[in-house]
Length: 118
Image (cartoon, rainbow, N blue to C red; front, side):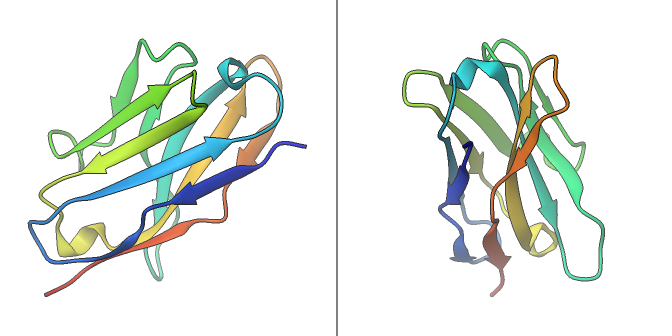
């Protein structure tokens, strides 16, 4: 059974930083492309960042480029999202998603709340 678990959310002032982490249990971690999504109240879930299975390629939503950095550690079976220069509009529930390569299997975490407010 694959489990995806996020941690690290919280309350931060505008301009501040937070670091989210995501761990994946189950079969080989290198089987998965890993992505972060977020969903703000009243809005659809949107892509934030992604990384390939070997960590060689990363992609970011335009809204977070230059502020957020996604990293991957295949030994520790984790991905992280370092969020700097946070804005009020970054407030959302952040979800980690594991996409199994060459299959239709997709696994979501339960989400972690990030609130940016003064």
